[in-house]
Length: 109
Image 1 (cartoon, one colour):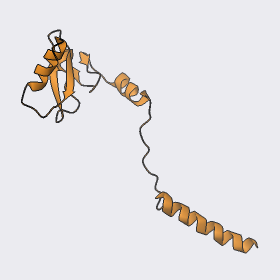
Image 2: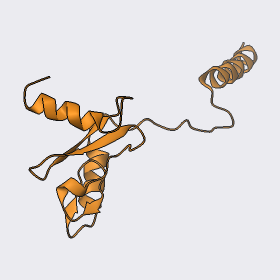
Image 3: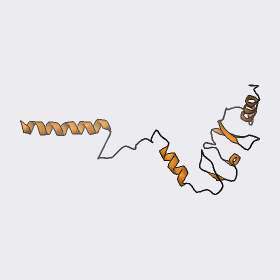
Image 4: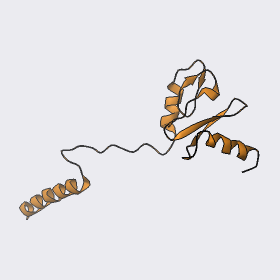
């Protein structure tokens, strides 16, 4: 009886590995955590004697000099108070994003 169970057990392990996608004992990469621990560690370990941009960890002289994290799909808009924001490109004309944000700030949009 024991001789019949061992081959069956080995066969199930084979199928388990095949259907779980693990070949040769290779582990699948793990997803990032759902908390901010990794980011906080990167932020705390970043060296900057000026201003450390919170969204890119770039070291710049002033907050409004921070770059956008994804410049290919974001436009940077600088506000008069020294702050800035990165917003999704809308696919419209150059400068249109800044104009729409200014209209929204004035309550006209």
